[in-house]
Length: 67
Image (cartoon, rainbow, N blue to C red):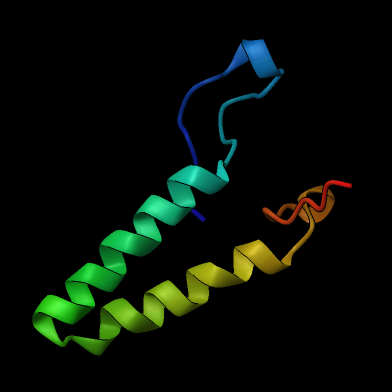
């Protein structure tokens, strides 16, 4: 995961927090790099990064199911 290097006190987040919107932007960039270059390293990294969305927030991931 890509993490922010600053505190976000409004949401009680300390340096090192990760946001799903940022992760999605990074994934989009990797996908576009892959489609333009055909370099599979971008696609491999993007697929690895997707795993963060499968791990619950409580365990350090990005998955949060709201009811």
